[in-house]
Length: 295
Ligand code: LMR
Image (cartoon, rainbow, N blue to C red; front, side):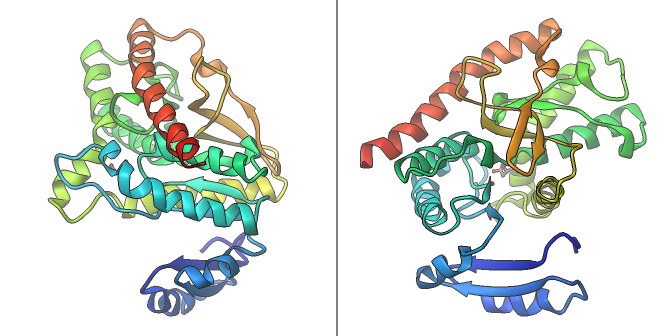
């Protein structure tokens, strides 16, 4: 539906023609083109500005995102190799889980191909922000449109850290509310996985969040100088090489990492930040080692 999308290329290993025919009937200015199977992967990527990668298998109840590593790591690796070969300048939006590891995997693949631009590789964590905004607005009876909660760290369990003290407009929470909201935001993906009872994980809210992040990227690519989103990117805001924070976007990708959200954290947030680092570090190293071992 976005007027900023001129052409939408859809790629999958099967069932693309039907989806493309279906979407192509919407009265929007964008063209829809379908590509099926690995023999059409290269053509699907030629000339593309933004590549969105939601490929792979979803969780079932009882699984963590990391349990998807063995299957999804290889899928992500081959897709990013094709991106490197066919549209190395594109923004890459990584949705495939475990995002904490698939973004480092993508970075290593791009480095091996000699085309890594850290400003253009994004782990999509917009759904964490969408959820945080929704839950906070509900709990505090606020107009949803006004609420903005930065979510930092990563995209799995305790690595998802909503900075409720930085909520805009400024809101005060009791300690119990902070605990309850933080845990709900961290477990929101699991809430959906359990409700779907084996039929997968979030797809509709994920698509909504991904569309928001794509729209923001397209605005930035179009020259809008006032675009901010949270994303899991290469970062020097902490001692970890990848970290989600608010970033300013430009047509070059990440224009700036917003460090102010991490200043003046509450004791609760500081403890949660310290606690998430070992898990996030291990997930990053797992992704890096996966690619380096195969080199
Ligand atoms: C989500 O947050 O909903 C996604 O990462 C999917 C999942 O497995 O939870």
